[in-house]
Image (cartoon, rainbow, N blue to C red):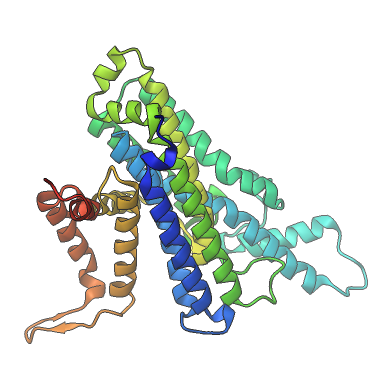
Amino acid sequence: MRKTFISENPSVLWFIALLGLFTLAVAIGSEATGTGLISTSMVKTLGKTLCLCLIAIAMDVVWGYCGILSLGHFAFFGIGGYAIGMWLMYARTEGIVLSSLEGQVIPPTPQEVQDAIGNQIFGVVGSSDFPWLWAFSDSLFLQLLMVVIVPGLLALVFGWLAFRSRVTGVYLSILTQAMTLALSLWLFQNDSGLRGNNGLSGLQNIPGYEDTSQATISLVFFMGSALALALGYILFAWVVSGKMGSVVQGIRDNEARVRFLGYRVERYKLFIFTLTAVIAGIAGALYYPQAGIINPAEIAPIASIYLAVWVAIGGRGRLYGAVIGAAFVSLLSSWFTGGGAPAINLGFYTILWTDWWLVLLGVSFVCVTLFFPKGIGGLFDYLVRKPS
C-alpha cells in the first residue's frame, strides 16, 4: 500500500494543530480583542518569534538535511525586510508630504512632491535624490515581488558559481559568510541608497491604516506570521520527504556516492539553497514591520551564526527541532536582555543577564554539541520512541 504524505510525515498534523491552538489562544488574549491578557508588545514578540522559526526551518533544510552549512541565510532574511521596508517608508512619507502640502494656493507639481519625499527619506544622509534601488518603491506589488526575486536571484547566482566549482564544507561556509559581510559593509555606506547605518525606520506604521491601533496591526501580523510558518513547514516537509528528500539527505551523508549513482548533485543543492533563501526573504518581510526598524547590523555575519546555533540547539535534521530551537532561544533572549531575568548578587559581583546572555548562549551551544548532539528535538524523539 502506497504511503501518503501525512503518513510519512505525522509531525505535520501535530505541528499545524499546536500552531493553530497557539494562534487562537494569542488572538483571544490580545488587547485587540479587548481581553488584554497578552500585551501588544508581547504579541509583537511572539509574531517575530514565528518569523524566526520560519527562517530556522529554512536553515535546517539547507544544513540539517542537505549538509550545506550556510552562514549567510540571515542576509536573505534582511533583504526581504529591506524590500518591504522601502515601500513602507515611501508610502508613509508620501502621505505625510501630501498632507503638509494640502490646501496650498498653487498645487505642488509631481516633481516637487517627489523631491519633498526624497528629502524626508534621504535627508539624514545628506541627499534628496532617489537612488535606482528605489525605482519600484511606490508600488506595493512590485516590492512584494522583490521580497522573493532579490534573495532568490542572489542565492541562485551565488549557489551556481559555488556548486559548479564543487566548493564544499568549511570553504563554502566561509564563502557564504564573506558574501554576508560584503553585503553588510556595503549597506553601512551612506551612498548605498538605503540610508546607511540609519537603516529604515517607522516600519510599524502601515500606510493607509494610521487610524488602526497597534494592537490590531500587531495581531494581524502575528496571524500572518503563523500562516506563513504553517505553509513553510508543510512545504519543507514535502521537500525533504519522498525521493527528493532521500537524494538531499544522501548528498549530506555521502555526496560522492550520490553523484556516482548519476544524480545531478549541483542541481539539487542549488534548488535547496535558492528555495530556502526565498523563504528566508519572506520571513524577513514579515519580521521587520513588527520590529519597526531594520539596519545593516541585522545582516552582519554574527546573525547567521546565531541562526546556526538555534538549529543546533533545537536539533538539526528535524523540522520541529528547528522551530523548538528558534522559539526557545528567541524568547529566552527577550527575557534575559529585556530585563525580565533578575540580577544575581554574589556579594563580590552582580550578574546582569543583559551582559552575560551571550556567554550563556555560547555555553549552551557547547553543552548541546558535546552531550546532546541531536538537540532538544532529539530528546523529544527519545521520550516518544523509547529504544527497545
